Length: 350
Image (cartoon, rainbow, N blue to C red; front, side, top):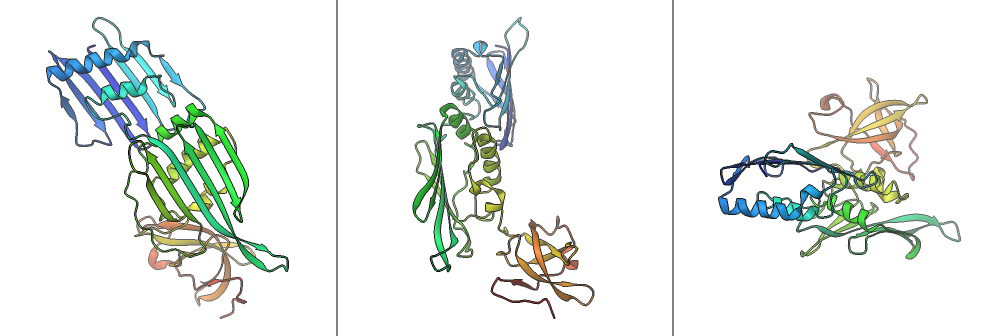
């Protein structure tokens, strides 16, 4: 072997390695978002020989030239090019699929820079709970517990989604798709690596979640709190997007995977902007608020016109922006006057 290049493009990482031989040792050039400070690697003769022997044992020359799974979880595209003395370059590539001994090859690359997944994810469990209002026998509103649970298990090769209403199991979906589950969990290996933190206090009626990620050989990591964007791990939108893509081929997983369920919550340093529909023509105006409980569909009292006449409107959209990317200058954006709860009879008169 006189030349080898290996590239990976993942949602959370870009990696490009070029290996060539100078006399009896390896010199490698690296571009990686995970290791931005490493550019060139020089290996001594002994490790260089070990690398060549391990690479020969993998047998990359027997790999299919194209490894593609149109139904595999999105997130990784890779290429491998190698050249033996006196022979032309050979290109091997993959899209959402790998050869059978892919992890063995990554452990060989580990001799130069870590790429295998010794801490791979064995299971992901998500439980989302909330109260729903129903009418009792006397047509009085009563709060009943409602819960959804997602469990993705590598060993069993299953995705299980269940729903409980008032403590009773009312819905279950179990898919046994072992290879697809393994590929999906592998595509998530670089996620959820931050230390869980204590979430800020949220309204008691907000949906609550518990997320447990079990990695091989390690104690589980657990996140808990309000099911909101300012509490969930930062990789959550990416994870949910990838899971929806994964599940699209198999069925509808349920409401807890909708952006409307977990996309609420202001983060530190952000401003809350509301798009509010006012008047019979449903004119849309921008306002600011510091009330993190406001949701789309809520009724609010807002100032309008030069005299700031209070008018009732309905929130069409909630957005979160830094002062630099706000849709309207902060100093020129009026504040919402009040949230109109269902028990209040506001007329919109000043």
